[in-house]
Length: 85
Image 1 (tube, rainbow, N blue to C red):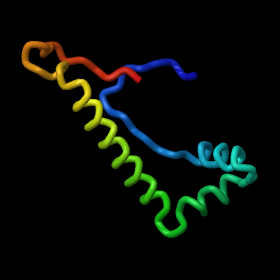
Image 2 (image 1 turned 60 degrees about the horizontal axis):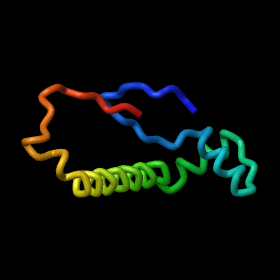
Image 3 (image 1 turned 90 degrees about the vertical axis):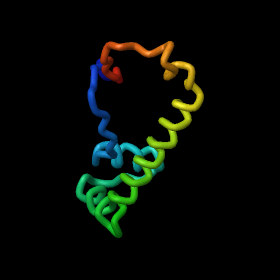
Image 4 (image 1 turned 45 degrees about the vertical axis):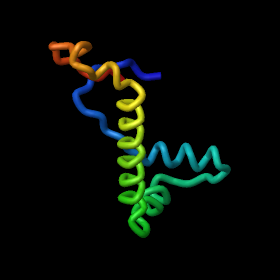
């Protein structure tokens, strides 16, 4: 596991290495070139990005809803904090 770092911004992406690894887990051996072709075919990379953004938005909405008490004025923290991943 990688070291936790403070981040101002979160970037979600499926890299070629991720795709090759996932393909292997599914029993398919593919090269980086084949993975790149797969991602670029019929707008798959953009479609995956949209799905990840939508999933991220839904996750944030559910967390905000379930942790509503943390966002009430009496619980407000005046210091700016950074997200730790």
